[in-house]
Amino acid sequence: MIFKLFPKEYNFFDLFEKQAAFALEAARQFRMVVGRGMVDEATLEKIIAIEHDADDVAHDIIHQLNKTFITPFDREDIHALAKELDDVVDMITTITNRMMVYKLTGINKNLVEFARLIEESAQSVQSAVKGLRNMKDVSVALEEINRLENLGDTLRDNSLAELFDNEKDPIAVIKWKEIYQDTETVLDICEDVAHVVGSILVKQA
Amino acid sequence: MIFKLFPKEYNFFDLFEKQAAFALEAARQFRMVVGRGMVDEATLEKIIAIEHDADDVAHDIIHQLNKTFITPFDREDIHALAKELDDVVDMITTITNRMMVYKLTGINKNLVEFARLIEESAQSVQSAVKGLRNMKDVSVALEEINRLENLGDTLRDNSLAELFDNEKDPIAVIKWKEIYQDTETVLDICEDVAHVVGSILVKQA
Amino acid sequence: MIFKLFPKEYNFFDLFEKQAAFALEAARQFRMVVGRGMVDEATLEKIIAIEHDADDVAHDIIHQLNKTFITPFDREDIHALAKELDDVVDMITTITNRMMVYKLTGINKNLVEFARLIEESAQSVQSAVKGLRNMKDVSVALEEINRLENLGDTLRDNSLAELFDNEKDPIAVIKWKEIYQDTETVLDICEDVAHVVGSILVKQA
Image (cartoon, rainbow over all chains, first blue to last red; front, side):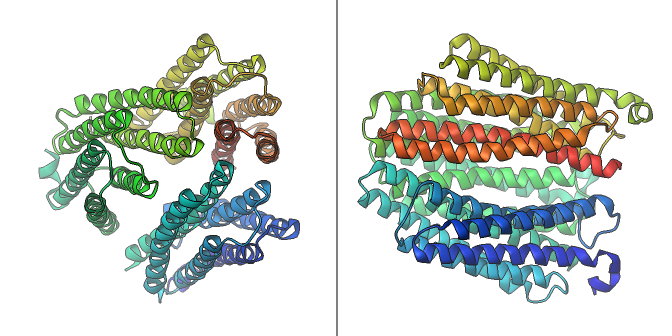
């Protein structure tokens, strides 16, 4: 077991799991916001607090990486994994904040669907990251992340087509186009996480 | 000859050449679509099929990289080259798909010119990648890629200026602005390929 | 002293300082342009000339990196620092050029404030890069860069909210939205520089 081979490095696993938990928590908050059809100040602050906590963990990982000679995976993979997991939270924060700045209100069924995909993808990201400890059940999680990203692509295309077909106010088009494209990007970043985990998996095999 | 020094690694060259061939094929399909002034379902499907095939090759390269100890170039350069070549195809696919989603029809002379530059750049990318086998004739191809990227910058500026001067429908401005900026990005990515190849060239010199 | 330990590598420090000086000079030209409320051809050409000179220095760094066995810092940090410093100048050039393409005129108080933050951040970037020689006074500069980036986030949010609240012409919204988001990105890139310098700092400690 990797865990036993690198006893002093155990906290890389702990730290990645913390990042994944923050990503999932941000995804849950986002889904609630979207389900209510408006961004309230309290939830935005909660998401920003999650982002700050997640930042601290990412910095811990990089700091420890710079101070550690032997690491459980390739250094570049540790760096990439920390960065991508951090990017998930950052992007969710950016979207939530932008929705408040744009004063977007009302339940948008496409965004509700995006939020569901994002929460599911964050759950699979968590499974994949947990699986790094013993390399078990990782492949299933990675395939699920890829599947959800493909669904996200289709949803973005359909959402944009609908927006350009039906919305006559150009200002509303500008706002929603950005929100749809950015929410799809969250699923892309989850797929980037999956690529890094997949790369670690191959090297350990 | 590098080929002889690293007999077991020969397929890295083969795989990069496959990627470059897919990029050129995507560029050719894109030029045809643009020349016809509309994205038909059949061509979009053809481009998406190219993208999937190109993805498989990129995954093969990364997989092989993770399993191989001795590589013909620095590992980071192999990784970067595979990624950038893949990005060329991805970006062309994204643009073609977006044109269909936006229901853009009619021959656009700026886009015709962009498609020509992209096909020429993809040809030079192919020459550069082929030149990696023996480091011959690479510089000429790299200079050509840079020249085409500069032409692309000017074309994007002129296209945007024209768009904002003449197009009074804001929805059309939103659509075409994105298409022009994304097509120029294809030339930027080809230039990124050139940078990686240039970096490999310098280290081998 | 690092300088004495790596006498033949001294020019990495010199080259990074050249890049930082070009970034600061571009920031100053940008602030002047913004203060005058219009992009004149002469200043745009001056900024483009700075960008070309900065490009040459970045290429020198990468070339030297590829030819040098012993480097004062990790190779990946040298590469990343050269890239991020180059990106500062590139982004300022892109924005200035876009303002001319969009024919944006008139003094915009938000943009004046952005230009001030960018110049201050470029000054701190210069301090941080100079500090690499002896690892002195670097932390203060890094904290200042982070502080300015946070101010930039708030300024972007306020500028966008104001734009969407007050500007009724969708074409003007499209133009200014892009300019505001891109100017904030300059501060993000300065923060990326700070992250690389911080990473070098930790490893040397």
